Amino acid sequence: MNTKTAKNAVNTVNSADMKEDKPMKSVFETLNAINVNDHTERKNGLTYLSWAWAWAEVKKRYPDANYAVYERDSVHGPLNYFDDGRTAWVKTGVFINGLQHIEMLPVMDFRNRSIPVDQITSTDVNKAIQRSLTKAIARHGLGLYIYAGEDLPEDERQDATQSAGTQNEAQPDAKPAKSRVAAVKGLCASIGITLEQFGAYRNAAAQNGIIPDLKISELSDSDYEALLRFVRLNAGQTA
Image (cartoon, rainbow, N blue to C red):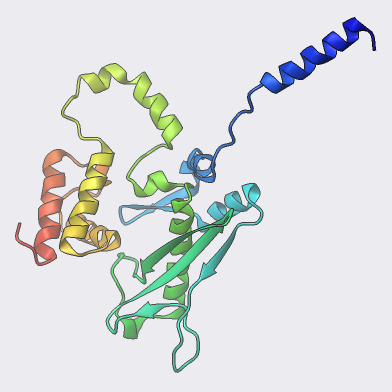
């Protein structure tokens, strides 16, 4: 190898060594960036994501992903739900790249109200398991913004925020959806109810004409405050 060739070889190696590798996105970043809006449906004021589509999207990107439906022993053999003698819930887990996220969901009727344990059918349990798995997938990132009351995934939400910057400045008192979601979670924790139970109260408030049948992020400030008062009162708390 002559001197000129050797010099070029050294330069090539040095250039390769100096090239920075583009960091790989995490599982959460990858799944959270997917827009799921075309695969949802709205029932009783709540938005649902197709569990079959969600699972397919996960398996496309992570073929080794798996899930578990937890069971308990009973006199009838293994049962795929748990109960406290009054109502029941299911417990599922989704594994992606060795990380498991667990979700527990009440067994509910079409009004999102807990079904008395002596009235639960296998169909009710199966539906709860599918919904629970979808929410466990959301904990990994896919469709998580649905459960946060958002309308777009984070990347698109940022673009929308930037394009509407002047409008946002003109409405400094508008409450972002995230602040309401955080407030709802805090309320649920303080009065000892689940987010699903809060959703059932929200549905009851809409059915009784106390608030319009809209998402929490779409309610006016007065309707939002009326909803919180309704939940406190019906959960046995002082308004």
